[in-house]
Length: 304
Image 1 (cartoon, helix red, strand yellow):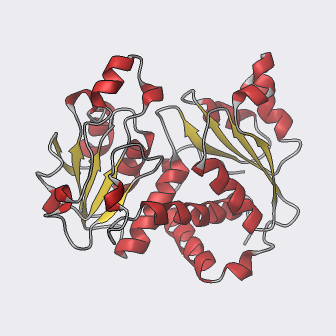
Image 2 (cartoon, helix red, strand yellow):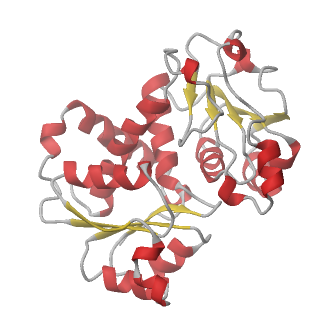
């Protein structure tokens, strides 16, 4: 039985296979309408989510399966004091596969040790969000027709942004990848990511606070929001939340085929005037997310 707790659980070959299946689903969705007939997905979201939860549910429904679960910890028995492990073992009696989001880092890993069905980590605190990373890889593959030989700008909250940490880890396995890390000094990329991923793999990177300085070099620009829920101090959040706002003027030197991405939800970090720019890919990204999750569910349920 396979789980997906972090992106490193998948080999490059397995990621390429998932991308291939996702593209096949996009081209011929009718071939997949009953692949998960009589299968059930449980979505256990101990932390609020719109896109990720609904994306998983839509993915399972479009494969012909059914969905059950909850959308906040308050509506589960953990509110009565039940352990997460006990919740997982109980839900495993009702469902064939579980997608789980939890505010505590490591909760999906601990759950996977107790589960009788495959666990998909749908986000654990500031740690990992592997299905968002798969979404990002499919988006880049579809929009750029490659996953190597590119310069990727990551902008905003690079300290707490789990999507950023996972994407750096995933893209570091491809050839000739360079990163431009754009953030205020308080939200710089953690040292362990630099040491254990970038430097260990000899990945070229530079850090800057200026979003426009290297704009003309970027093939992908990945914007992130400053996350209020990760801050201990409201004053720090208010001071940093609007540090970067991408607008048309900041894109004046950008490449014509730049791919602008964002894991969403967006707050202020991308002006709505950018939405009509053909380089804006963040709503396409949402759709790609459904298809890659369909491919992942098929893989973990071992359905050909």
